[in-house]
Amino acid sequence: MAGPVSGAVAGAENVRRLRAYLDELQAQDLPLPVRQGKVNVSAIALACGFDRQVLYKNPAAKEMLAEVEAALGVEAEADEDEDEKPSVRTPDKRDRRIHTLEQENAALRAEVAGLRERLRRVRHVEEHMAETGRWLAPLPPSLGETGK
Image (cartoon, rainbow, N blue to C red; front, side):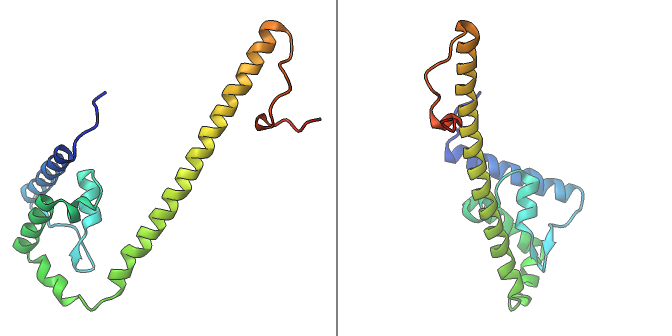
């Protein structure tokens, strides 16, 4: 298993993936994905296999995408539609939903980790009982005992 990748290496890999994707579009004579008159950054990021923030934060990727937009004339269409507010609010709604789902996912992962630890302790008690035929000291409340 490879160790952690530095930011520069990851950034270069993302640029390489974007270049391969754009070259493939050009080879197949396909346009960039567009949504509401603008380049669909989410679709491009998904196709390239990285987070869409790469296309905003990575200077090389951002410049490469801007060049392709300018070459295809997509940027000019976006300027005409700038007054449309729903296209600005839609990503915010999606971002909030994604954030909420990520929080729920983190909470569920924590719960699963706790349940796995509890299961490990119960198995330990069962093994002790099977080996010795004797009970351990009263189980702690964390193992679900009600004290009866």
